[in-house]
Length: 274
Length: 359
Image (cartoon, rainbow over all chains, first blue to last red; front, side, top):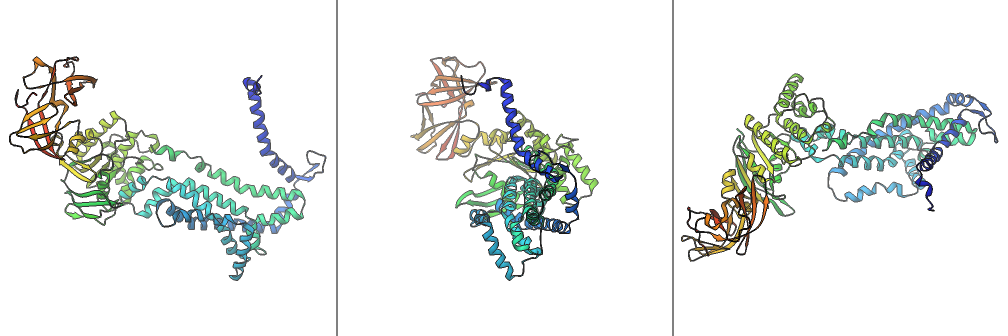
């Protein structure tokens, strides 16, 4: 008898598949369930599978904590600023990489990875030393600057792929009909490459919301964002605080993903090029 | 008026000429095809006219004025591309209206002109659809509408039919020709398909390796190709190398008196329809013996593979008019062209039952 005899019975095969799917689902969802349980637990001791006392005690505490609301404010000021600045700096570069030939193009393209090649913490300490001289430590723009460095690869590579997938014929057709190069970019190239740009912007935005190391080093003590605050909360308070905070941090990602769904799954691009 | 002149236009890629000293005059309202195999310089020439490329030497004039240095966006030309023609993120109305909006026309005028041009290309009421919902042929019609709606002086067509299937290609080229005639717009059409060029053009410029081979009307081009390249490229042609000596032309099995021609090496070029293949007694005396090697049915006519002497020739015959593998069959030559080197030397036309000598 073959080792895989059970695969030959349709019912058994379905059962095997189902159990795999369930196992994978559990692997994904169990940590989230634990998180949710902790978030609504006022008291939860070891042998019990669910908390002994449910409640909203820690929610109130967190929402009223001024440190945390201040951190949220900083986070939601820094993330959009970083995203927009990164777009302004990187999108022209992405377009240039996609469309123009210039010396050292391949080298420069790969060199964008340079900041990822070193241990992050070492790099941040070096940057902190530099920023100290320019009085950027503990300032809003200091944090924005250091976070920008992390966004370069994402914001250049993904849109560059998007731009180079736009057929040149379409740009030429627009020019031929009388559009200036700038007009061609905004009316034709950018809209068609938009899914890639949106994806890059989402990744950068979420990355900035999640960034803790560099922000801690450069921003402290004045600029404390939510992930930085998280370190303090997880270290100093009971488990529910960390759980609730994690859930709060998830909300922006979820909202963005729902909003961007149209772009992420859009099939009109490929379908239009017959 | 929108006469076009290419004057000694050259374009080099990596030191090699893609277009070599092109001189071409296209009259106002004329439909001219640039015909040649890929890499012959036809598309490069078209793109220089459109303003996407600048020539390295020479001048391009429109209505007597040089257009060099003007970008594609200011030249009064409009182009239909081979692929990826429509903006996928805009519906048909916005695609067609694109050029009009850039010209800052009033909204009502734009709507009227878009509606009128969609009527002209036979796709009214398509305004709300998106390019992905259209077939390839419909997309090319919309692309044509988008080019024509801005009322350009010159319409440029860069192999717009090559991605379509055969039947549609024939229909659409007839429509394009009809629209062109109706509007009287000067049109330059790039194609590698000689049948397409012959069918629609007023004149055809045959190009090869950047060099203009011949510029003539379709019937002249077919009847008397000026170069050996044009002879091979347009239609099908039997080529037999031979020589002229002592007032006789000898090529393969054919021996023809040519009292006025100098002694030299030549190539005899014969259209398949200028050969007649029949059993001996049906033909006049002057013919050569030949052997039928195969028959291809091509619908309204048959293509015969015939061997005479050392040469394999193609002969077109009417349906049912073929002797089936007759051993004593004969081949009769009605008309032939003689090329010396690459250039056309002379045309030979057989008088009834004359001229051609049997070996």
